[in-house]
Image 1 (cartoon, rainbow, N blue to C red):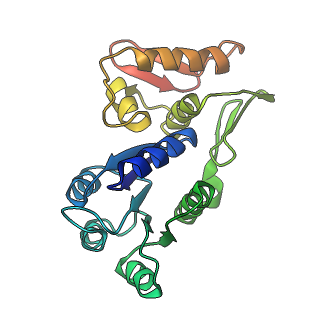
Image 2 (image 1 turned 90 degrees about the vertical axis):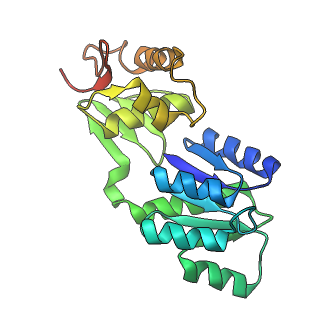
Length: 223
C-alpha cells in the first residue's frame, strides 16, 4: 500500500520511510507542501501523513486543498503543534487522526492500521486464490496448509497480484505499486523479485499461480 509522507525534516522522513517499508508499505516522501500537493493530486494513496509546519505551503493549507479533491483518503497529522486548539483545528479541517511529536513509531503504525480498517470492509484482508490464502493484516501466507515465509517486498508483490487476480500487470505498474517513485523500472529487479516469489509459493506445488506473459508482464490466476 502506498503512503504519502509530507515531512520537511530529512532525518525524520528517512526514519519513518524506512519503518514503513519494513511494515509492507510503499512510502513516497515530499519535503514541502507544494511537492506534497503535487503528489497527492496525481497519485492514489492508502494514507497521507502530514506535518503542519512545512515550507512553501503549510499543512493547514495543504489539507484544505486535498480534501476538496479527495474527501475519502485517510489523513493523519504528525506534528509538534500540541495544543488542544491545534488538534481541534486539524480534525475540523479534515484530518482523520492527529499524533503529536515526539511519538513511538509503533503508535504511528497502529494508528495507520486503524485508519485502514475503517476504510476497508472487515473481510477484505483475507484473499484466497485456489489453495492459497493471504492475510494482509496478519501478513501470513498459507498454501495447501503450509505456511510460506516471505520478505516484506515479496509479500507486497503477492498482495498486489492477489488483489488484481486475473489481470496482467506490466512491469511499470508493478514498479509503481511496490517500489517507490525513484525506482528504475528498466532494471531486472522486478523479474528477480518475482522469480524469488515463485520459487517459494509456486515451485513446491503442482498448480502454478503466477505466470509470465511474454512481452507484457505477469498475472496471478488459476490455469
